[in-house]
Figure 1 (cartoon, rainbow, N blue to C red):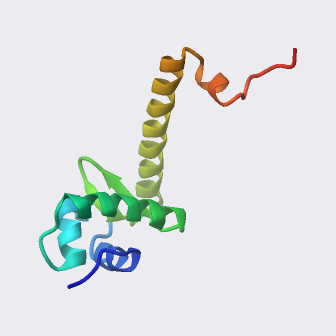
Figure 2: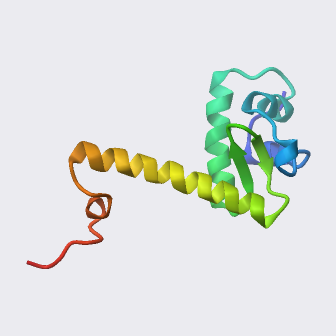
Figure 3: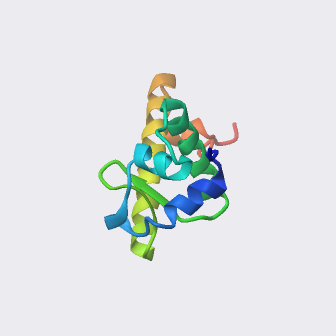
Length: 113
């Protein structure tokens, strides 16, 4: 039985190039593993997607399109914008809970006293 690794995931993604060929996490796990996945595999998939992106692979994902490799610069840019918006939402939540502005959260606007 196959193991879910960056190599098996990338091999499965190579048959899903472009937004129109996006695939759900469950289906992508099934392709990479060769059998029905369980929720642990889907969590592992998300971790491996992060690893692949950090290695420079153009792995795109969106709730309405699924996972796919970017076919165009536009698709890559759309994914980058989606990730940026998600990151900003998390930072805004943290800033609100700490009752500070987002820039102050990272000390970007700290002035010497």
